[in-house]
Length: 439
Image 1 (cartoon, rainbow, N blue to C red):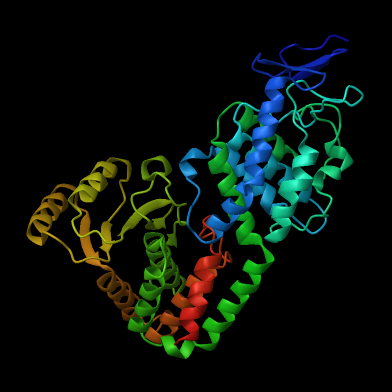
Image 2 (image 1 turned 90 degrees about the horizontal axis):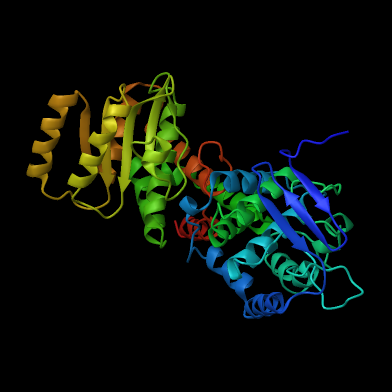
């Protein structure tokens, strides 16, 4: 039977393999003892691991000292990593996630190392690729200990590479035939993205570790504590100003106050819409941090949709009082949004050059028939409350408690469809627990 040479296939020779992908690209993998160049790469990788590379990265992410730059993680890689973590159960998926962490680490440390080649040895009696790397050694000594230490994956102490299905003498390609449990296709998609240099390894690694941190048992326990505490102290938040004080104090306690401003605004809008006071609209899910507005079709951070069209948009601007440039950028986006009625900016700073801004807003409103507003955070909250209370669908106490509840659930990853927050939230949850304790 003839085969189609344009289809993906693997050619296996006595001393090498050739991977033919469907775009006529051929990758050659020579078998034999590792080359001197490979030995140098392996030595460097081990040294970086020994210096605490993975442990330090996890700690910095937990403490929100660093975050993943989402723009440098390809959409395919994001989807693959999301599905890898979502597929994790107590019985399946752990090995592929552990392997993905290791491959991302290796690529981050030595981009030239091919992470398809999981065996490398100087022993002529053992199977090895000339440019391979012993992933089993790296796993047992560095990767599994770190993942176990921070409870990111519940792995056997001997490591995930002890899984026989990951040890076949074939490169990790779409044609790897071993029976793998978990998100096999997603893992192989990630490998392809890495080897074709379509995604940034270190940012992809941060992204994956962030998702694992948010799924860890410690995080879940703290989240449950937070939500329970918020429910018990609901009476403390019977008034709008009490919640404003809470979220402002929480925001100011973090190095990522701007992101918490977006989350607090989005959670209030979600609470407001859930009352029915705004009619038949929905809140567009919160965008990931650093997602480009133009790329995602956004006008602002918090948007109301009617029949999938943006009708109202609010952009959070932490600590910025002069917003002329932001207003002009919003005007440029109007040509792609024909149904928008209100565009607003919400700032935590005093509004600067009000006369100039008001004059420009009046010009824009006359040209486009769109209501432009620039408000302080407290004024915006008051406006949302007024709209809700005037409808008689809710009262100040119920709306305030609902806002606090949703804010806590957002941070606790309990509403990922509405707020897919991929920054590590543990530090935020812990700090909010402490603030609630003091109230």
